[in-house]
Image (cartoon, rainbow, N blue to C red):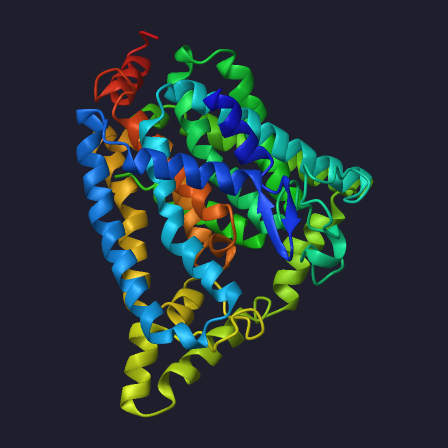
Length: 423
């Protein structure tokens, strides 16, 4: 039953309806209720209790910082601002749901199937049309105008396939985060039914889905994660003997895609988006202007006003209108202390994975690093369900790195066996 809920939450995050002007989605209700239950329920296994307490301490700091800012800036905030504040404060609770799931390998399989569904549906939208493939109430909120209500058109006029999400960036963020499950299933697939098929399908669906989403922030995040994870001190030993094959496979894939493009012209929208739009817009869709605006806004005024904006944030800043994106939005609206607390909170699961699995934990970290790196340049994490999904899978990854009902060195041991040719 839980695996079905995981699949529905990850694959159909916008399934729901409008209650007045407020969208009510099945995913938000389930994840927040599920996470709150696991946060409040006292029966944590001893092995997970220490992880939970470490996370709670930093999360509590973030909540107190946000509450202080809320008290100071409450009069400036609209109902939409309050919803954004609540989302930012409460979404990390999903970590507990991932940390405590009773059958983690089944959850991994559910994530892989959800990735296949999201990626394939995005490709179908690209080939057949966004509105033509829509199922109101399931793939998007009932009563929503897909093209009018969602920012899915690029500067060059191409459609960013949103799959079952609000826009292409959110779909790409889910697929990036899901690579955490791909990494685990690749190494420990023996405990998952049809693991090879699921891993291959999820990996292909992720690449295709991110491609048709036309999300440059996702591409940026993936490149950052690749650079970090292939660094000698981070690169898993189990990959060392296969790096040449991986690079060869990547080169063949890129070469094949280039040949297909030259022969048929298919995929020109990818070139227009990732090359044409990037080179033709030195402001990165207004992001450099957004940073310039933020610096001017924070530095103009009396010393007391400057300190107040830095510490408590300023909700008079319209991040969308001023093109303030990524971490700049957190500084602008929530304040610098909130950003620092949030960075510490997001870094903790990565540290926990590294502590338990060592270099082999990099296979679990890749998706988390890629998704969080994209937050540097995009506001994806401030829209549901991106942050909930990230912490949900981060908690699951921490549990998996501890051996999910096996020894704490399960991932390391399995990789060492591969190196000596035992498995």
